[in-house]
Length: 300
Image 1 (cartoon, rainbow, N blue to C red):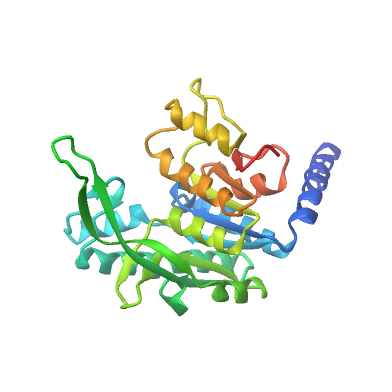
Image 2: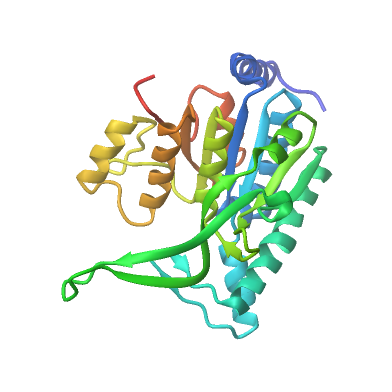
């Protein structure tokens, strides 16, 4: 197959545009939270795997943290196990936790590992339980009710929050040709297992590794203003203003808070990007335009 002069020039333009980014980010860690459409649509799954393999080949160190909410929900439904949510967190009893471990640590994790390996990479599947990678504690939700003098504390079962990341495991991968693929399951010192929000795990890992970038894949174009226009670069101060005036609200709030926490604790930038776009990760990291919103602690 031959290409036209215009096609060849376009390929050359893309490659030369990527070069300074490759030079700048060689040896740097990029933490990617993988979920949404990018994780369920076949074409997007394959483009994601290619992005990750290429990043590793040109000298970047990608670390993947994945979700799996829809897959967990589907299996719970098949098993006739009732599922409910409090403030966006799945209430997780012992029976549900067994399903969570089966889906996240087994089915989903190994599917991602296999796809990356088939694409030419060397992925290794991990859960937070492996080598005590993620130490966690039970998450308790406070609900304020006007009729009560103190907040109501709600126990949502085996749902956790991150206390500590054992970076030794991740350093071993970063110093080799391995690509870690992490399921967001953690344990406490007593061996109790917890289901943890994947955004929170990705943020905690990015903070621990002082990553160059934290990338959160979503099913929206990024952060938009009130006119629905994409805001491609925001400082932490600007984000706080958008939260205050209710421009950022609802389901986007936890992701944005995760991004703000990361950049306040040493991560160079956080990116909320559109996972519905093929090769979204590569476009965000290695091109001028990107495909989402970049958040930094101060104006770059």
